[in-house]
Length: 252
Ligand SMILES: Cc1cc2nc3c(=O)[nH]c(=O)nc-3n(C[C@H](O)[C@H](O)[C@H](O)COP(=O)(O)OP(=O)(O)OC[C@H]3O[C@@H](n4cnc5c(N)ncnc54)[C@H](O)[C@@H]3O)c2cc1C
Ligand code: FES
Image (cartoon, rainbow, N blue to C red; front, side, top):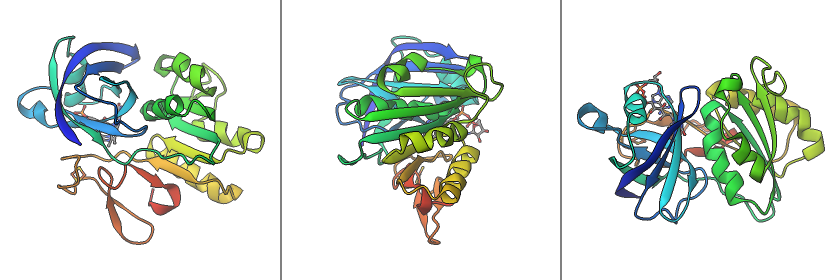
């Protein structure tokens, strides 16, 4: 983990209320799929950093995608090429896929799809199936990018694109045919809970790892703002011990 200054290369809307920002950084070669960065969105109060999953990266560039929610992300959406933003990166444990896990299922909802793109791009040598759920047509993003590196199935809440199913329903409908070796997921808590329930009910044996989103402060394990409950009664820091956990290990 290091503190770096990134230079905004581009910052454009890619779907309704969703922006993609590309940042030039000194070095991004050590970023793992599923890791995140903690990005300052401006000056004064906005110096407090916001955590965002790294959707794509190259040697010297990171791409984040963010939904405008409150003051921090609103300020981020006003940044223009050439602006300099302070950040901590790379943070968190990231997704690890074993050599023996050849078939990967990605289950993503809403803004949770972004860190999953980094997995699909990192594991191009595997059979990757992506099941992505969005609110409606206007919310869909990165369709072509996912299609280039995975077998993609999209669903929407209103049925405007694909089936009128959420990401977990899409995954379950395909499960018997695909039988993935590992399941990786990121999305809203309600979606992760549905996935956990379905895995238990269907007796699915493949390991499943989920990326959690908690409110964060420091992002480096010091402030305890992001603590989550584990099923063994202990606690973990989402920023430092996660954000990725085995699904049976965390209370959802
Ligand atoms: C590891 C991690 C990765 C994330 N990756 C992405 C991503 O790739 N794209 C993306 O759009 N968002 C992502 N988030 C969520 C993002 O950090 C928040 O939406 C953002 O910090 C909100 O800041 P704000 O100042 O705009 O909103 P605020 O004014 O601070 O809050 C506005 C609303 O957002 C909610 N919120 C604030 N912080 C978080 C948070 N950390 N997680 C969930 N909800 C929050 C608040 O409860 C409130 O309802 C991620 C969060 C974590 C912890
Ligand atoms: S955000 Fe400070 S410990 Fe996790």
